[in-house]
Length: 220
Image (cartoon, rainbow, N blue to C red):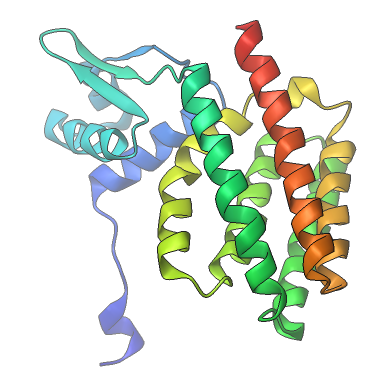
């Protein structure tokens, strides 16, 4: 079997789900908003069955939910939902980052450094959405190096929801550069390969982000 045989092709429904996901991330579609099947079919020039397929994908990720005879709506996450996600991050990420310390090699650190450099460039352009994407990419990369498949799977299951919440963080940071700087400090701590320092810095970072997200949630 060659590489061409193992290429994974996305269905049209998956592609549409990706576009809708970005609209939710970018706040073009609001929490609680109803998604009109006919309007979306016209917008993307696809059949309603394709839109329904996209809805099912988003529903599996808990980004939307269906109400009988009322339609499909974007999930309106509660403060309890957010507290649970932050608590799960505080359980998983410090342990995962510590595990990764002994596994990360020079090539891995180059990959992470490239992400941090991209964050710096993106921060200078004040592109918050791209920054949040890079944030998720950075954390996912380190967690994936934790050598714990169950931990990785659980973490991946909340990534989409966390990305939705991150979209509301911009108003609680003094600037995109301050958001970048937090990740630069986290990267610099990883470079030291000191497990206790990495654990402490990871907890500090997640707690800081969590407090800002909860501030936003409480203010809505």
